[in-house]
View 1 (tube, one colour):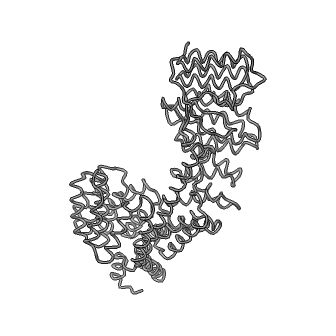
View 2: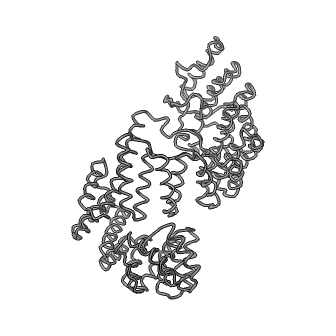
View 3: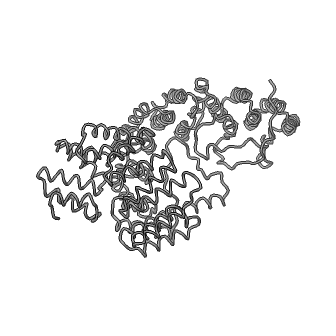
Length: 633
Protein backbone atom coordinates (compact mmCIF):
# COMPACT_ATOMS: atom_id res chain seq x y z
CA UNK A 1 0.00 0.00 0.00
CA UNK A 2 1.49 3.36 -0.96
CA UNK A 3 2.16 5.87 1.73
CA UNK A 4 0.19 9.13 1.93
CA UNK A 5 1.92 12.32 0.96
CA UNK A 6 4.08 13.81 3.68
CA UNK A 7 5.32 17.29 4.36
CA UNK A 8 8.99 17.90 3.86
CA UNK A 9 10.76 16.71 7.01
CA UNK A 10 12.45 19.22 9.25
CA UNK A 11 16.15 19.73 8.76
CA UNK A 12 16.72 20.46 12.43
CA UNK A 13 18.81 17.74 14.01
CA UNK A 14 18.55 17.39 17.79
CA UNK A 15 21.61 16.68 19.85
CA UNK A 16 21.50 13.44 21.78
CA UNK A 17 23.94 11.12 23.49
CA UNK A 18 25.55 8.72 21.08
CA UNK A 19 24.59 5.65 23.10
CA UNK A 20 20.85 6.41 23.06
CA UNK A 21 18.83 5.05 20.10
CA UNK A 22 16.68 7.47 18.13
CA UNK A 23 13.10 8.10 19.27
CA UNK A 24 11.97 10.33 16.41
CA UNK A 25 8.77 8.27 16.05
CA UNK A 26 7.49 10.04 19.16
CA UNK A 27 6.82 13.22 17.19
CA UNK A 28 4.26 11.38 15.07
CA UNK A 29 2.71 9.70 18.08
CA UNK A 30 2.29 13.08 19.76
CA UNK A 31 0.41 14.38 16.75
CA UNK A 32 -2.25 11.76 17.40
CA UNK A 33 -2.14 11.93 21.21
CA UNK A 34 -0.46 8.54 21.46
CA UNK A 35 2.87 9.45 23.04
CA UNK A 36 3.83 8.10 26.47
CA UNK A 37 3.91 10.46 29.45
CA UNK A 38 7.62 11.17 29.69
CA UNK A 39 9.75 13.98 30.96
CA UNK A 40 10.19 17.05 28.76
CA UNK A 41 13.44 15.75 27.34
CA UNK A 42 11.87 12.42 26.42
CA UNK A 43 8.85 13.88 24.64
CA UNK A 44 10.36 16.60 22.49
CA UNK A 45 11.10 14.84 19.22
CA UNK A 46 11.35 16.13 15.66
CA UNK A 47 10.63 14.49 12.32
CA UNK A 48 13.56 12.72 10.79
CA UNK A 49 16.04 14.78 8.81
CA UNK A 50 18.21 13.68 5.92
CA UNK A 51 21.51 12.40 7.24
CA UNK A 52 24.30 14.88 7.70
CA UNK A 53 27.34 14.52 5.50
CA UNK A 54 29.49 13.88 8.55
CA UNK A 55 27.29 10.95 9.66
CA UNK A 56 26.82 8.71 6.58
CA UNK A 57 23.92 6.26 6.60
CA UNK A 58 26.02 3.53 5.05
CA UNK A 59 29.59 2.51 5.71
CA UNK A 60 32.08 2.86 2.86
CA UNK A 61 32.44 -0.91 2.59
CA UNK A 62 28.69 -1.37 2.03
CA UNK A 63 28.28 1.42 -0.52
CA UNK A 64 28.17 0.56 -4.23
CA UNK A 65 26.68 2.21 -7.29
CA UNK A 66 23.25 0.59 -6.97
CA UNK A 67 22.94 1.40 -3.29
CA UNK A 68 24.06 4.97 -3.86
CA UNK A 69 21.43 5.34 -6.57
CA UNK A 70 18.72 3.92 -4.28
CA UNK A 71 19.56 6.35 -1.49
CA UNK A 72 19.61 9.27 -3.87
CA UNK A 73 16.24 8.34 -5.42
CA UNK A 74 14.63 7.81 -2.04
CA UNK A 75 15.71 11.19 -0.68
CA UNK A 76 14.80 13.02 -3.90
CA UNK A 77 11.34 11.41 -4.02
CA UNK A 78 10.79 12.36 -0.41
CA UNK A 79 11.72 15.96 -1.15
CA UNK A 80 9.28 15.93 -4.07
CA UNK A 81 6.50 14.74 -1.76
CA UNK A 82 6.22 11.07 -2.82
CA UNK A 83 6.75 9.47 0.58
CA UNK A 84 5.37 6.12 -0.62
CA UNK A 85 8.01 5.61 -3.27
CA UNK A 86 10.73 7.01 -1.00
CA UNK A 87 9.79 4.47 1.66
CA UNK A 88 9.75 1.51 -0.75
CA UNK A 89 13.11 2.39 -2.25
CA UNK A 90 14.71 2.99 1.15
CA UNK A 91 13.37 -0.30 2.53
CA UNK A 92 14.75 -2.20 -0.47
CA UNK A 93 18.10 -0.51 0.04
CA UNK A 94 18.06 -1.50 3.70
CA UNK A 95 17.27 -5.13 2.94
CA UNK A 96 19.97 -5.22 0.29
CA UNK A 97 22.68 -3.65 2.50
CA UNK A 98 21.51 -5.02 5.88
CA UNK A 99 22.46 -1.64 7.37
CA UNK A 100 20.64 -0.61 10.58
CA UNK A 101 20.83 3.06 9.63
CA UNK A 102 18.86 2.47 6.42
CA UNK A 103 16.14 0.50 8.18
CA UNK A 104 15.91 3.32 10.69
CA UNK A 105 15.60 5.82 7.84
CA UNK A 106 12.78 3.79 6.28
CA UNK A 107 10.94 3.80 9.61
CA UNK A 108 11.47 7.54 9.88
CA UNK A 109 10.00 8.11 6.41
CA UNK A 110 6.90 6.08 7.27
CA UNK A 111 6.41 7.88 10.55
CA UNK A 112 6.88 11.24 8.87
CA UNK A 113 4.08 10.26 6.48
CA UNK A 114 1.80 9.20 9.36
CA UNK A 115 1.83 5.61 8.12
CA UNK A 116 2.08 3.50 11.24
CA UNK A 117 1.47 0.13 9.63
CA UNK A 118 4.23 0.68 7.07
CA UNK A 119 6.55 1.71 9.89
CA UNK A 120 5.79 -1.59 11.60
CA UNK A 121 6.40 -3.47 8.34
CA UNK A 122 9.82 -1.82 8.15
CA UNK A 123 10.55 -2.69 11.76
CA UNK A 124 9.56 -6.35 11.33
CA UNK A 125 11.67 -6.58 8.17
CA UNK A 126 14.56 -4.96 10.02
CA UNK A 127 14.35 -7.50 12.83
CA UNK A 128 14.07 -10.43 10.43
CA UNK A 129 17.06 -9.22 8.45
CA UNK A 130 19.25 -8.36 11.46
CA UNK A 131 17.80 -10.34 14.39
CA UNK A 132 20.60 -9.16 16.69
CA UNK A 133 19.64 -5.49 16.34
CA UNK A 134 18.78 -4.22 19.81
CA UNK A 135 17.65 -0.88 18.38
CA UNK A 136 15.08 -2.52 16.09
CA UNK A 137 13.59 -4.47 18.99
CA UNK A 138 13.45 -1.36 21.15
CA UNK A 139 11.72 0.82 18.54
CA UNK A 140 9.23 -1.91 17.65
CA UNK A 141 8.39 -2.29 21.33
CA UNK A 142 7.88 1.44 21.72
CA UNK A 143 5.62 1.68 18.67
CA UNK A 144 3.46 -1.29 19.60
CA UNK A 145 3.05 -0.10 23.17
CA UNK A 146 2.20 3.40 22.00
CA UNK A 147 -0.41 1.99 19.64
CA UNK A 148 -1.99 -0.06 22.43
CA UNK A 149 -0.94 -3.43 20.99
CA UNK A 150 0.50 -4.59 24.28
CA UNK A 151 0.46 -8.34 23.73
CA UNK A 152 2.31 -7.98 20.43
CA UNK A 153 4.90 -5.83 22.20
CA UNK A 154 5.92 -8.53 24.65
CA UNK A 155 8.09 -10.46 22.15
CA UNK A 156 10.19 -7.49 20.96
CA UNK A 157 10.37 -6.23 24.55
CA UNK A 158 11.83 -9.55 25.67
CA UNK A 159 14.26 -9.48 22.75
CA UNK A 160 15.32 -5.93 23.60
CA UNK A 161 16.25 -6.96 27.14
CA UNK A 162 18.00 -10.14 25.93
CA UNK A 163 20.04 -8.19 23.37
CA UNK A 164 21.15 -5.55 25.86
CA UNK A 165 24.71 -6.11 27.14
CA UNK A 166 24.70 -7.48 30.69
CA UNK A 167 26.43 -4.42 32.11
CA UNK A 168 23.68 -2.16 30.65
CA UNK A 169 20.70 -4.45 31.25
CA UNK A 170 19.63 -3.07 34.63
CA UNK A 171 19.53 0.46 33.23
CA UNK A 172 17.54 -0.65 30.19
CA UNK A 173 15.01 -2.40 32.42
CA UNK A 174 14.72 0.67 34.63
CA UNK A 175 13.66 2.74 31.61
CA UNK A 176 10.61 0.59 30.79
CA UNK A 177 7.92 2.42 32.83
CA UNK A 178 8.05 5.23 30.26
CA UNK A 179 6.24 2.85 27.87
CA UNK A 180 3.06 3.09 29.92
CA UNK A 181 0.82 5.65 28.28
CA UNK A 182 -1.69 7.99 29.90
CA UNK A 183 -4.25 7.09 27.25
CA UNK A 184 -6.32 3.93 26.89
CA UNK A 185 -5.67 0.75 28.87
CA UNK A 186 -2.57 1.80 30.81
CA UNK A 187 -2.99 -1.22 33.09
CA UNK A 188 -2.66 -3.53 30.09
CA UNK A 189 0.68 -1.88 29.30
CA UNK A 190 1.80 -2.27 32.90
CA UNK A 191 0.76 -5.92 32.88
CA UNK A 192 2.74 -6.56 29.69
CA UNK A 193 5.86 -5.04 31.26
CA UNK A 194 5.30 -6.92 34.52
CA UNK A 195 4.95 -10.23 32.68
CA UNK A 196 8.01 -9.60 30.51
CA UNK A 197 10.13 -8.84 33.58
CA UNK A 198 9.23 -11.94 35.60
CA UNK A 199 12.25 -13.98 34.42
CA UNK A 200 14.57 -11.08 35.25
CA UNK A 201 13.28 -10.89 38.82
CA UNK A 202 14.80 -14.32 39.38
CA UNK A 203 18.29 -13.19 38.36
CA UNK A 204 20.41 -11.48 41.06
CA UNK A 205 21.94 -8.96 38.64
CA UNK A 206 18.58 -7.62 37.46
CA UNK A 207 16.23 -8.47 40.32
CA UNK A 208 16.00 -5.01 41.87
CA UNK A 209 15.77 -3.21 38.52
CA UNK A 210 13.00 -5.58 37.38
CA UNK A 211 11.03 -5.16 40.60
CA UNK A 212 11.20 -1.37 40.59
CA UNK A 213 10.54 -1.12 36.84
CA UNK A 214 7.39 -3.22 37.20
CA UNK A 215 6.35 -1.15 40.21
CA UNK A 216 6.96 2.06 38.26
CA UNK A 217 4.87 0.79 35.36
CA UNK A 218 1.93 -0.03 37.63
CA UNK A 219 2.28 3.29 39.43
CA UNK A 220 2.21 5.16 36.13
CA UNK A 221 -0.93 3.20 35.23
CA UNK A 222 -2.62 4.43 38.41
CA UNK A 223 -2.49 1.16 40.34
CA UNK A 224 -1.41 1.39 44.00
CA UNK A 225 -1.65 -2.16 45.37
CA UNK A 226 0.65 -3.93 42.93
CA UNK A 227 3.51 -1.38 43.26
CA UNK A 228 3.37 -1.66 47.05
CA UNK A 229 3.87 -5.44 46.88
CA UNK A 230 6.72 -5.15 44.36
CA UNK A 231 8.47 -2.41 46.33
CA UNK A 232 8.15 -4.42 49.51
CA UNK A 233 9.96 -7.27 47.79
CA UNK A 234 12.70 -4.92 46.55
CA UNK A 235 12.98 -3.31 49.99
CA UNK A 236 13.36 -6.68 51.67
CA UNK A 237 16.11 -7.59 49.21
CA UNK A 238 18.11 -4.36 49.63
CA UNK A 239 17.08 -1.40 51.81
CA UNK A 240 19.79 0.78 50.29
CA UNK A 241 18.32 0.65 46.78
CA UNK A 242 17.67 4.27 45.80
CA UNK A 243 15.07 3.66 43.02
CA UNK A 244 12.92 1.80 45.55
CA UNK A 245 12.96 4.81 47.86
CA UNK A 246 12.16 7.24 45.04
CA UNK A 247 9.18 5.22 43.87
CA UNK A 248 8.03 4.85 47.47
CA UNK A 249 8.05 8.65 47.77
CA UNK A 250 5.61 8.82 44.87
CA UNK A 251 3.49 6.02 46.27
CA UNK A 252 3.25 7.38 49.82
CA UNK A 253 1.09 10.31 48.62
CA UNK A 254 -1.84 7.88 48.50
CA UNK A 255 -0.42 4.82 50.25
CA UNK A 256 1.08 5.65 53.68
CA UNK A 257 2.45 2.10 54.05
CA UNK A 258 5.14 2.96 51.50
CA UNK A 259 6.78 5.48 53.82
CA UNK A 260 8.72 2.80 55.69
CA UNK A 261 10.66 2.03 52.49
CA UNK A 262 11.80 5.66 52.42
CA UNK A 263 12.73 5.92 56.09
CA UNK A 264 14.60 2.61 56.00
CA UNK A 265 16.58 3.82 52.98
CA UNK A 266 17.42 7.08 54.72
CA UNK A 267 18.68 5.08 57.73
CA UNK A 268 21.32 3.34 55.58
CA UNK A 269 24.93 4.60 55.83
CA UNK A 270 25.06 6.72 52.66
CA UNK A 271 21.60 7.82 51.49
CA UNK A 272 21.43 10.28 48.60
CA UNK A 273 20.82 13.88 49.60
CA UNK A 274 18.25 14.20 46.83
CA UNK A 275 16.09 11.47 48.33
CA UNK A 276 16.13 13.14 51.74
CA UNK A 277 15.25 16.47 50.15
CA UNK A 278 12.33 14.85 48.32
CA UNK A 279 11.17 13.28 51.59
CA UNK A 280 11.30 16.69 53.27
CA UNK A 281 9.07 18.07 50.51
CA UNK A 282 6.63 15.20 50.94
CA UNK A 283 6.46 15.76 54.71
CA UNK A 284 6.00 19.47 54.18
CA UNK A 285 3.15 18.88 51.73
CA UNK A 286 1.49 16.73 54.39
CA UNK A 287 1.97 19.55 56.96
CA UNK A 288 4.23 17.33 59.04
CA UNK A 289 6.52 20.28 59.66
CA UNK A 290 8.21 19.03 62.80
CA UNK A 291 9.33 15.82 61.13
CA UNK A 292 10.30 17.73 57.99
CA UNK A 293 12.52 20.07 60.01
CA UNK A 294 14.21 17.11 61.70
CA UNK A 295 14.95 15.55 58.31
CA UNK A 296 16.23 18.76 56.76
CA UNK A 297 18.46 19.18 59.81
CA UNK A 298 20.08 15.85 58.91
CA UNK A 299 20.48 17.14 55.37
CA UNK A 300 22.23 20.36 56.37
CA UNK A 301 24.39 18.49 58.87
CA UNK A 302 25.45 15.81 56.39
CA UNK A 303 25.73 18.14 53.39
CA UNK A 304 26.59 21.56 54.88
CA UNK A 305 27.70 22.98 51.53
CA UNK A 306 24.38 22.19 49.86
CA UNK A 307 22.70 25.58 49.62
CA UNK A 308 19.18 24.33 48.86
CA UNK A 309 19.06 22.42 52.15
CA UNK A 310 19.51 25.67 54.10
CA UNK A 311 16.75 27.32 52.09
CA UNK A 312 14.37 24.48 52.92
CA UNK A 313 15.39 24.61 56.58
CA UNK A 314 14.76 28.35 56.76
CA UNK A 315 11.29 27.98 55.25
CA UNK A 316 10.34 25.30 57.79
CA UNK A 317 11.71 27.32 60.69
CA UNK A 318 9.51 30.26 59.65
CA UNK A 319 6.50 27.94 59.49
CA UNK A 320 7.26 26.64 62.98
CA UNK A 321 7.73 30.07 64.52
CA UNK A 322 11.51 30.03 64.84
CA UNK A 323 12.51 33.37 63.25
CA UNK A 324 16.02 33.54 64.71
CA UNK A 325 16.89 30.07 63.42
CA UNK A 326 15.28 30.86 60.07
CA UNK A 327 17.39 33.99 59.72
CA UNK A 328 20.61 32.08 60.34
CA UNK A 329 19.63 29.35 57.84
CA UNK A 330 18.67 31.79 55.12
CA UNK A 331 21.83 33.86 55.55
CA UNK A 332 23.85 30.66 55.30
CA UNK A 333 22.00 29.83 52.07
CA UNK A 334 22.84 33.23 50.56
CA UNK A 335 26.49 32.95 51.63
CA UNK A 336 26.79 29.58 49.89
CA UNK A 337 25.14 30.96 46.78
CA UNK A 338 27.59 33.84 46.68
CA UNK A 339 30.52 31.46 47.07
CA UNK A 340 29.45 28.87 44.48
CA UNK A 341 26.00 28.79 42.87
CA UNK A 342 24.56 25.29 42.84
CA UNK A 343 21.62 23.83 40.94
CA UNK A 344 18.26 23.22 42.59
CA UNK A 345 18.21 19.88 44.39
CA UNK A 346 15.48 17.92 42.62
CA UNK A 347 16.00 14.16 42.37
CA UNK A 348 14.61 12.30 39.37
CA UNK A 349 11.66 9.97 39.68
CA UNK A 350 12.82 6.39 39.53
CA UNK A 351 12.07 4.51 36.34
CA UNK A 352 11.77 7.59 34.13
CA UNK A 353 15.23 7.43 32.61
CA UNK A 354 18.26 9.65 32.85
CA UNK A 355 17.37 12.20 30.18
CA UNK A 356 17.78 15.72 31.45
CA UNK A 357 15.23 18.37 30.52
CA UNK A 358 18.04 20.65 29.43
CA UNK A 359 20.00 18.04 27.48
CA UNK A 360 18.86 19.16 24.06
CA UNK A 361 18.79 22.91 24.71
CA UNK A 362 21.41 25.32 23.32
CA UNK A 363 24.01 26.38 25.84
CA UNK A 364 22.67 29.93 26.10
CA UNK A 365 19.18 28.59 26.93
CA UNK A 366 20.64 26.30 29.58
CA UNK A 367 22.52 29.21 31.14
CA UNK A 368 19.40 31.38 31.07
CA UNK A 369 17.32 28.65 32.70
CA UNK A 370 19.89 28.15 35.44
CA UNK A 371 20.04 31.89 36.04
CA UNK A 372 16.26 32.03 36.37
CA UNK A 373 16.44 29.21 38.88
CA UNK A 374 19.15 31.03 40.81
CA UNK A 375 17.11 34.25 40.84
CA UNK A 376 14.00 32.41 41.94
CA UNK A 377 15.79 30.82 44.89
CA UNK A 378 17.43 34.09 45.89
CA UNK A 379 14.08 35.85 45.60
CA UNK A 380 12.50 33.27 47.91
CA UNK A 381 15.28 33.81 50.43
CA UNK A 382 14.96 37.62 50.31
CA UNK A 383 11.19 37.41 50.75
CA UNK A 384 11.50 35.03 53.70
CA UNK A 385 14.19 37.15 55.32
CA UNK A 386 11.86 40.12 55.03
CA UNK A 387 9.16 38.09 56.76
CA UNK A 388 11.61 37.05 59.50
CA UNK A 389 12.70 40.65 60.08
CA UNK A 390 9.05 41.68 60.36
CA UNK A 391 8.43 38.95 62.96
CA UNK A 392 11.45 40.25 64.88
CA UNK A 393 10.01 43.79 64.58
CA UNK A 394 13.01 44.91 62.54
CA UNK A 395 10.97 46.90 60.03
CA UNK A 396 13.89 48.73 58.35
CA UNK A 397 15.61 45.38 57.89
CA UNK A 398 12.45 43.88 56.41
CA UNK A 399 12.22 46.74 53.94
CA UNK A 400 15.87 46.31 53.03
CA UNK A 401 15.33 42.68 52.05
CA UNK A 402 12.36 43.70 49.94
CA UNK A 403 14.60 46.21 48.15
CA UNK A 404 17.02 43.39 47.34
CA UNK A 405 14.14 41.35 46.02
CA UNK A 406 13.01 44.27 43.85
CA UNK A 407 16.48 44.34 42.29
CA UNK A 408 15.84 40.93 40.74
CA UNK A 409 14.17 41.20 37.34
CA UNK A 410 10.43 40.85 37.38
CA UNK A 411 10.11 40.75 41.18
CA UNK A 412 9.44 44.36 42.15
CA UNK A 413 5.67 44.47 41.55
CA UNK A 414 4.75 40.87 42.32
CA UNK A 415 1.77 40.23 44.58
CA UNK A 416 3.96 38.73 47.31
CA UNK A 417 6.23 41.81 47.41
CA UNK A 418 3.28 44.21 47.54
CA UNK A 419 1.71 42.22 50.36
CA UNK A 420 4.92 42.30 52.37
CA UNK A 421 5.27 46.04 51.84
CA UNK A 422 1.67 46.56 52.92
CA UNK A 423 2.17 44.40 55.99
CA UNK A 424 5.19 46.47 56.99
CA UNK A 425 3.19 49.68 56.66
CA UNK A 426 0.39 48.20 58.77
CA UNK A 427 2.83 47.10 61.50
CA UNK A 428 4.06 50.68 61.68
CA UNK A 429 0.57 52.09 62.14
CA UNK A 430 -0.02 53.08 58.52
CA UNK A 431 -3.03 50.92 57.71
CA UNK A 432 -4.67 53.35 55.20
CA UNK A 433 -1.40 53.59 53.25
CA UNK A 434 -1.07 49.79 53.37
CA UNK A 435 -4.57 49.32 51.95
CA UNK A 436 -3.90 51.90 49.26
CA UNK A 437 -0.78 49.98 48.23
CA UNK A 438 -2.71 46.72 47.84
CA UNK A 439 -5.42 48.49 45.89
CA UNK A 440 -2.81 49.12 43.21
CA UNK A 441 -2.84 45.41 42.40
CA UNK A 442 -4.38 44.60 38.98
CA UNK A 443 -8.06 43.65 38.70
CA UNK A 444 -8.31 42.87 34.99
CA UNK A 445 -9.51 39.28 35.51
CA UNK A 446 -11.64 37.53 38.16
CA UNK A 447 -8.46 35.85 39.41
CA UNK A 448 -6.76 39.24 39.76
CA UNK A 449 -9.74 40.55 41.73
CA UNK A 450 -9.76 37.48 43.93
CA UNK A 451 -6.04 37.83 44.68
CA UNK A 452 -6.39 41.49 45.62
CA UNK A 453 -9.42 40.89 47.85
CA UNK A 454 -7.68 38.03 49.64
CA UNK A 455 -4.55 40.12 50.21
CA UNK A 456 -6.45 43.10 51.60
CA UNK A 457 -8.67 40.91 53.77
CA UNK A 458 -5.59 39.23 55.25
CA UNK A 459 -4.07 42.63 55.96
CA UNK A 460 -7.22 43.70 57.85
CA UNK A 461 -7.30 40.40 59.75
CA UNK A 462 -3.68 40.92 60.84
CA UNK A 463 -4.66 44.39 62.00
CA UNK A 464 -7.63 42.87 63.91
CA UNK A 465 -10.03 45.00 61.89
CA UNK A 466 -12.64 42.24 61.82
CA UNK A 467 -15.62 44.37 60.74
CA UNK A 468 -13.73 46.07 57.91
CA UNK A 469 -12.40 42.71 56.68
CA UNK A 470 -15.91 41.21 56.79
CA UNK A 471 -17.34 44.14 54.83
CA UNK A 472 -14.60 43.83 52.23
CA UNK A 473 -15.23 40.12 51.74
CA UNK A 474 -18.97 40.66 51.48
CA UNK A 475 -18.24 43.02 48.59
CA UNK A 476 -15.76 40.53 47.13
CA UNK A 477 -18.33 37.73 47.11
CA UNK A 478 -20.77 40.00 45.31
CA UNK A 479 -18.19 40.74 42.60
CA UNK A 480 -16.70 37.25 42.35
CA UNK A 481 -19.65 35.00 43.20
CA UNK A 482 -19.30 31.42 44.41
CA UNK A 483 -15.54 31.59 44.92
CA UNK A 484 -14.99 29.02 47.64
CA UNK A 485 -11.88 30.69 49.07
CA UNK A 486 -13.60 34.06 49.44
CA UNK A 487 -16.71 32.45 50.95
CA UNK A 488 -14.54 30.51 53.40
CA UNK A 489 -12.67 33.63 54.51
CA UNK A 490 -15.93 35.53 55.01
CA UNK A 491 -17.25 32.62 57.12
CA UNK A 492 -14.24 32.81 59.43
CA UNK A 493 -14.74 36.54 59.88
CA UNK A 494 -18.46 36.04 60.54
CA UNK A 495 -17.45 33.71 63.39
CA UNK A 496 -15.09 36.37 64.76
CA UNK A 497 -18.07 38.74 64.84
CA UNK A 498 -20.19 36.02 66.57
CA UNK A 499 -22.47 35.75 63.53
CA UNK A 500 -22.69 31.97 63.79
CA UNK A 501 -25.75 31.50 61.57
CA UNK A 502 -24.04 33.40 58.75
CA UNK A 503 -20.87 31.40 59.27
CA UNK A 504 -22.73 28.08 58.99
CA UNK A 505 -24.61 29.19 55.86
CA UNK A 506 -21.40 30.25 54.16
CA UNK A 507 -19.52 27.07 55.07
CA UNK A 508 -22.39 24.89 53.91
CA UNK A 509 -22.29 26.79 50.61
CA UNK A 510 -18.56 26.08 50.31
CA UNK A 511 -19.21 22.38 50.91
CA UNK A 512 -21.97 22.40 48.33
CA UNK A 513 -19.71 24.03 45.73
CA UNK A 514 -16.63 21.98 46.59
CA UNK A 515 -17.51 18.74 48.44
CA UNK A 516 -13.87 17.86 49.04
CA UNK A 517 -12.95 21.17 50.72
CA UNK A 518 -11.66 19.74 53.98
CA UNK A 519 -11.11 23.14 55.59
CA UNK A 520 -14.82 23.95 55.43
CA UNK A 521 -15.76 20.73 57.24
CA UNK A 522 -13.02 21.35 59.78
CA UNK A 523 -13.98 24.99 60.43
CA UNK A 524 -17.64 24.14 60.93
CA UNK A 525 -16.91 21.13 63.14
CA UNK A 526 -14.38 23.04 65.26
CA UNK A 527 -16.77 25.96 65.73
CA UNK A 528 -19.44 23.61 67.05
CA UNK A 529 -16.94 21.91 69.36
CA UNK A 530 -15.53 25.20 70.61
CA UNK A 531 -19.04 26.37 71.48
CA UNK A 532 -19.71 22.91 73.00
CA UNK A 533 -22.85 22.36 70.90
CA UNK A 534 -24.00 19.57 68.54
CA UNK A 535 -20.90 17.53 69.34
CA UNK A 536 -21.90 14.35 67.43
CA UNK A 537 -22.43 16.47 64.30
CA UNK A 538 -19.11 18.22 64.93
CA UNK A 539 -17.33 14.86 65.16
CA UNK A 540 -18.87 13.70 61.87
CA UNK A 541 -17.71 16.87 60.14
CA UNK A 542 -14.16 16.57 61.49
CA UNK A 543 -13.90 12.91 60.54
CA UNK A 544 -15.04 13.85 57.04
CA UNK A 545 -12.31 16.47 56.86
CA UNK A 546 -9.70 13.94 58.00
CA UNK A 547 -10.82 11.50 55.31
CA UNK A 548 -9.54 14.00 52.72
CA UNK A 549 -6.23 14.78 54.45
CA UNK A 550 -5.36 12.03 56.95
CA UNK A 551 -2.96 13.21 59.62
CA UNK A 552 -3.47 16.94 59.06
CA UNK A 553 -2.35 18.42 62.42
CA UNK A 554 -4.98 21.19 62.50
CA UNK A 555 -7.83 18.80 61.78
CA UNK A 556 -6.39 16.32 64.29
CA UNK A 557 -6.39 19.20 66.79
CA UNK A 558 -10.10 19.76 66.11
CA UNK A 559 -10.84 16.06 66.69
CA UNK A 560 -8.84 16.11 69.93
CA UNK A 561 -10.81 19.17 71.06
CA UNK A 562 -14.08 17.33 70.42
CA UNK A 563 -12.85 14.37 72.48
CA UNK A 564 -12.04 16.80 75.27
CA UNK A 565 -15.54 18.27 75.09
CA UNK A 566 -16.97 14.76 75.25
CA UNK A 567 -14.89 13.98 78.36
CA UNK A 568 -12.64 11.44 76.66
CA UNK A 569 -9.43 12.84 78.07
CA UNK A 570 -6.96 10.03 77.19
CA UNK A 571 -8.06 10.14 73.54
CA UNK A 572 -7.95 13.92 73.59
CA UNK A 573 -4.41 14.16 74.94
CA UNK A 574 -3.19 11.50 72.49
CA UNK A 575 -4.66 13.29 69.47
CA UNK A 576 -3.56 16.73 70.58
CA UNK A 577 -0.09 15.46 71.42
CA UNK A 578 0.25 13.95 67.95
CA UNK A 579 -0.93 17.19 66.35
CA UNK A 580 1.44 19.33 68.43
CA UNK A 581 4.45 17.14 67.63
CA UNK A 582 3.70 17.46 63.92
CA UNK A 583 2.95 21.16 64.05
CA UNK A 584 3.86 23.00 67.29
CA UNK A 585 1.30 25.71 66.60
CA UNK A 586 0.40 28.08 69.45
CA UNK A 587 -3.33 27.29 69.39
CA UNK A 588 -2.73 23.53 69.32
CA UNK A 589 -0.40 24.04 72.29
CA UNK A 590 -3.12 26.00 74.09
CA UNK A 591 -5.55 23.11 73.63
CA UNK A 592 -3.04 20.46 74.64
CA UNK A 593 -2.09 22.42 77.74
CA UNK A 594 -5.74 22.76 78.79
CA UNK A 595 -6.35 19.02 78.47
CA UNK A 596 -3.19 18.26 80.46
CA UNK A 597 -4.27 20.81 83.09
CA UNK A 598 -7.69 19.19 83.43
CA UNK A 599 -6.00 15.81 83.93
CA UNK A 600 -3.95 17.16 86.83
CA UNK A 601 -0.71 17.16 84.81
CA UNK A 602 -0.09 20.82 85.54
CA UNK A 603 3.68 20.87 85.19
CA UNK A 604 3.40 19.39 81.70
CA UNK A 605 0.68 21.89 80.84
CA UNK A 606 2.81 24.85 81.93
CA UNK A 607 5.75 23.55 79.90
CA UNK A 608 3.63 23.34 76.74
CA UNK A 609 2.11 26.78 77.35
CA UNK A 610 5.49 28.41 77.94
CA UNK A 611 6.84 26.88 74.77
CA UNK A 612 3.79 28.08 72.82
CA UNK A 613 3.96 31.55 74.35
CA UNK A 614 7.58 31.83 73.26
CA UNK A 615 6.42 31.53 69.68
CA UNK A 616 3.69 34.17 69.89
CA UNK A 617 3.27 36.22 73.05
CA UNK A 618 0.15 37.91 71.71
CA UNK A 619 -1.85 34.86 70.64
CA UNK A 620 -5.48 35.42 71.62
CA UNK A 621 -6.44 31.76 72.08
CA UNK A 622 -3.54 31.12 74.45
CA UNK A 623 -4.16 34.37 76.36
CA UNK A 624 -7.87 33.54 76.75
CA UNK A 625 -7.05 30.00 77.93
CA UNK A 626 -4.62 31.19 80.60
CA UNK A 627 -7.03 33.91 81.76
CA UNK A 628 -10.01 31.54 82.00
CA UNK A 629 -8.01 28.92 83.92
CA UNK A 630 -6.36 31.63 86.06
CA UNK A 631 -2.88 30.37 85.27
CA UNK A 632 0.22 32.51 85.43
CA UNK A 633 3.38 31.48 83.63
